[in-house]
Length: 435
Image (cartoon, rainbow, N blue to C red; front, top):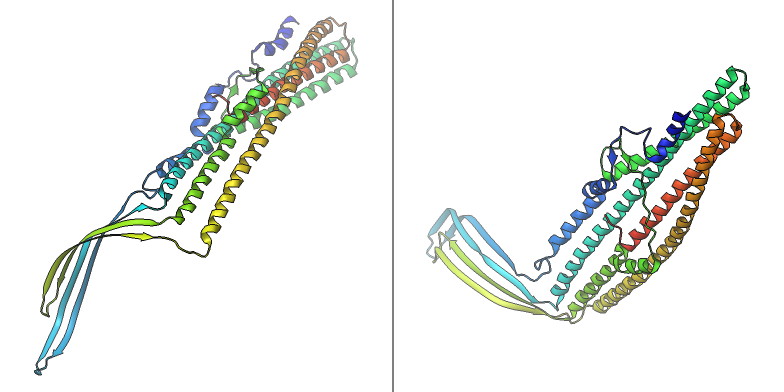
């Protein structure tokens, strides 16, 4: 009896009974695998590399364009010429050759400061890509945290149900022994068997949920979905979160809000580029060409030349059907919309943080209450088990104590998970989730 009682208590002092051969996946390892393998993060990293490659003065239009050209035109003539004297000259297969090759350069030296606005816009697009990467990382890491601690809770609940089943098996065995010696009715045996089946059914349901959570975490880690593992089932709660600090941190660090601020800067530079069309565009041009031609007839049969040309072009939009005014108005409205999006996103985040913080406080209070309930139910279970072993407690009373303890553990682990999930979500919104 004493050994069986210890067997019942072992899961609750950290000795696993149902998963001892599974490798342990730590939270740090899970996060590292996610940062390395997750598809969303890898795509965001590649997008950032593209944005970084695009930030050049050449892409902004600040550098000259230099082109090399080669032209080779050939003509084969079959011709008969009659001179004034009456003589006829036949030309058969005469070949004319004209070759022109050289280098030309064009350089826009002033375009109403559009090139500078474009270069600054490219930098902000790079910042946008970096912030999108941060958002992707926070989102994926938060999902890993949520799933990991869900698995930890499910492991705790599986340990509890294993203990419940072991005690129910002992109860059934005791009932059968008592029935054999005539001290119990068949009804007592049947009730014990029904209760054992109910416990095993609960375990099957818990195992199903546990298996689904494992698949979800393996998917996040981008590894074979049937990879077997277990997690550390200790959940530590940060109970020091303060609402004003969370709101302040969210305003400064929340990636979604930062994206809106960057979008506003991008639109400001877009407006500057539109306004640049009111200024003249000045371009310099120059070139150096070599020319060579050959002709079998005529006064000149071969010629060569070297040409150097240079100049500038200035253009100014005097009238374009009022499109310039229209484009500027549209750009200003779009800029106004970015400010409205900032205000909307700010209010949305503040609302989310405030709502989650209320859930966080409620879950903390609920967690403390469930800790007390679990301790009481555990003590009641231990006392009832001792009385059952000596036959001073009816089976139905023993079953009630057993169910009360199981329900208390379920409520406690659920409250612990909900509190941890609230904490993770708050830190994600505040941009302060560490990994």
